[in-house]
Image (cartoon, rainbow, N blue to C red; front, side):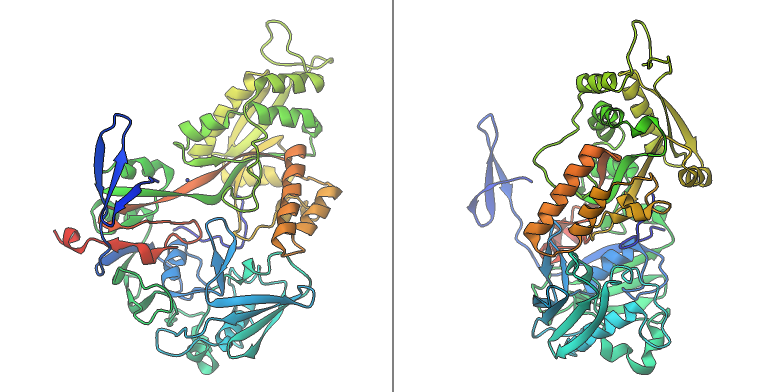
Length: 544
């Protein structure tokens, strides 16, 4: 079963036509032949069939299942959400204003938003949800994945029926991003009913475009369009969710035509994408692949060697041949679609000539007819890399890197370790490089990986740099977009100069959908149904 890793952090990509008429476009080919492309007019109705692996609770604030996390976006909503570039936009909140030197923020709720049972959304619901996540509801233990991100929030109080105020322990830069938790109805689960919040009996109305009509335990869910929805109503009338034991069962359902959408892994991706009656929609995932440098070993404390390695690895070859083109190359561990990522230049493009120069500067020369570089003492430039043996993609990546480094005279010794041994050596620091990955939070904060206070914990590499510590702290202190961008640009400059991580790429994900699903689908990793209101089904075609 896929597990949602939303806040916690674990080791671990259009055709443009010129409109000619409402229903028809013409695309010019190089040969000058005009091809008519008929645009279908959206029609209402139809049923979208999805699937989810088994989950423990329907409560969106306690859920840990990734499939259900995505489906919950159809039912529940938050104060704010993310644009494609990871900027924050209003959802249930109409507006917000910072007070007290940005140590508090007031959110004004949209007027005229109603729960699926007809009750009006009020600030009481927001405060109730906050207290549920924080563990402030008597008799309800909270293991919510949202709890960690809300640690800086001291309290949330009702100002009036449409206004809530969140007060922070200090000024923070992610004050809006952490308000993406789904809102629960206070009138349903307050008082004696609170005991059902963390039980298998949780079923509650939301405010989203679809409402839950029926749920058969671990078998299926039936949703119908919310006809009183405050926003743009979707074209698709019904959504059915089939609950299955595992990913393999989901693949079987899709191949048999029983569900309309699947989130494939890279191995399955091309198989489904090549089918004539399916379409694929690609997006950047928060899965960051990299080489971690052990700063406790003498050889890699030399920045010239670290930079030489970065210039030598052919990341395009890895992304194309191993990840089948489904990776976005980066030099910095921030999602490349994020407004915080500086795209002005790729700093470590393949450049073996520069790598040779850097290695010479580091004191390692390649003698005539020699296979590997040596220093004045005759020691071979030998580096040991470890990675996990249960990941075929990383195994192949390690071999490619080994081949690349050999071209500049570096002897890379690769070891594929079972999970327990891999983790053991990570914590014991008995390696030079490790090939690994992070599934990063949607809330940008790199403290966990690089701050010296995290050495012995998630700062596996033992990186200690006071200038970077300061930049990390400053990047989280101010919510002003201009200043925040400046601080993350400075972070990017520092990390690409020092090279504590040798970045490879962010993995891309996709949804594969049956051809009966029409419209301009724009899935995002955070919400694959981000514009569900624009999806539609050609009902006549689907019924054939």
